[in-house]
Amino acid sequence: MKNFFTIIGGMGTMATESYIHQLNLRTRAHQDQDYYNYTLVNHATVPDRTAYILDNTKPNPLPELIEDFKQYATLGPDFFTLPCNTAHYFYDELAKAVDVPILHMPKETVAEIKKRYPEAKKVGLVATQGTIRDQIYDKEILAAGYDLAKPSPAVQKMTDELIYDDIKEQDVVDGKLFHDLVAQMIQETGCDVVILGCTELSLAQEREPITDLPIVDSQSTLVDRTIEWADKTQKSVRQSG
Image 1 (spheres, rainbow, N blue to C red):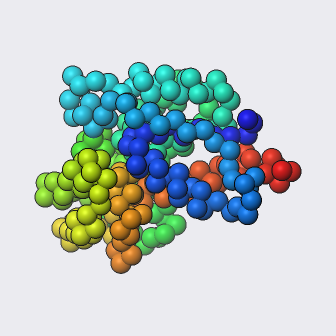
Image 2 (image 1 turned 135 degrees about the vertical axis):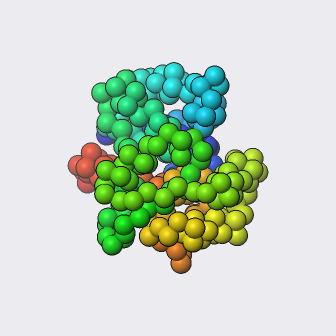
């Protein structure tokens, strides 16, 4: 197969499935050959990213992620996507390990704010404790000129419950909990928009969508940028097929 991209997923598996689902739904396709060429790596046994970031004595995900990128780079993809926000803690090391471009989900998500909420000045972030701790979004948000709001312990507890107890453990989305935590984040911090900075929160948005609050969904943004990049690299092949 030529002219394809590679998805390094499985962190977690249901969130990766949501990413693939949205990618295929948004593809402008009228026949089988209109869909994008891609390979999916569902590496579910990658050690937990948040656990390592919070405690470096825990198993380190980086060696396995580097192995994945190196292994699949040999197939010659046009680019990689990594539908896990917390794993972007290792982005620089992964980018150095291969000569293939890697979409940067946090960077693309922050750029999306200017398109959708051009008047926004203060940006809130809800995510895993690992993403909050590793500050990958902080850097992008502040560099873009926004004020940054992080979750209170109460909002973080609600977020962790939704991500780990509900979605990862039971594949269940508590819609009320999801809506409440975003609403409380806005109420407590006065932020103009909230980033859903975890792909499990993106899964919650897919199943129990928030339509009345200002949010930017990181995984949804990654889907859009994936399509844009794929259109550039696969356009000639798709048109001739």
